[in-house]
Length: 411
Image 1 (cartoon, helix red, strand yellow):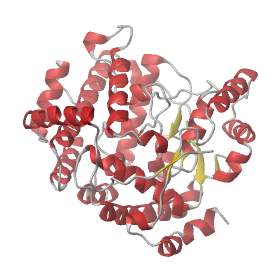
Image 2: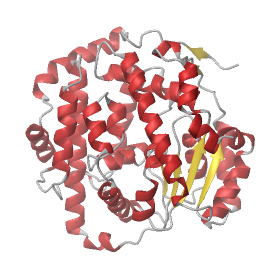
Image 3: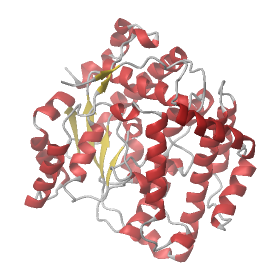
Image 4: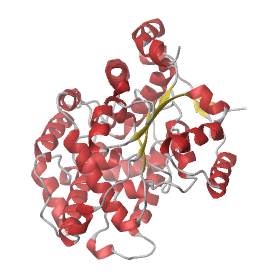
């Protein structure tokens, strides 16, 4: 029987005494970690010994996001330190990529094979499908540690064990301590297969920013701009990662892609897309639970109902874009997968996807996926209870707002 957890501290988060001690130390560091573009660039340069950040179009996007973060009410010291570290990390990744490209110009000439892209909202089976296909070892995937630090620091090249993995071990341990229930909603480990949305963040144009904080200014700016250049920067990073650690054909995944199908098709010719679908009402509630729960990382109190209302609007826009653009990629390169159908025949679906991608399904691939399924039964870690009421929402209103999506993909 699956254990059910009720989140009773979303608005006023509670922390263990051990975690509270760490938070107090972080709060003391906040004055030295300003959310300021000049300070962030200076830290990235100091940490890498590099100064060329590549094309500077990202600077406007960074400035908009910083302005949006300064508008977040109740931002506490640990949150400032967290955001400073993340933003500086993305700048460091730019520096390291630019240096790598200068040293190895042949990276630009690598031809990417058409990737397989899983596009679906959280809780629609995307993570499970992503990890299941990755277990076949047919495709190049992105472990969590590599998504956060894709390019090694010059002083750490060739070191074993890789310091990037060791840093991620510590980060995951901290995350599990501060948010002990998060893994019930989305399990995170150092080596689990992760989304390339982290790579998009290196160009400071990513839907990831909307999930990290309630930033209406950034959301509106992002939606008003074409994302082609960000996806081109993603493609460049994928080439560099193939150069560094090998791989033949990428398996990608992110909810962001649902509203970027034309851009995907333009930047990755021949891309194969798997769209996952599930009743959007419980999906939306589950996603809002994750976002409001993780908000404790940077603010208190957490305006749960405001965040929830904003995300319903955002998801409605995203699904409307999917309805509008779904036929951009035809049935010869795409498939729609219903969550219940996937769970009813997981390996049967993988056979369809391998055939769609033109990839042979070998005995070794089958064995790898079967082994993954044996160790990853649904709900093995427990579940988090959600309801429309806990977020100040009305379920009938949600059903009505998502009806066009349901009619297109679930009926």
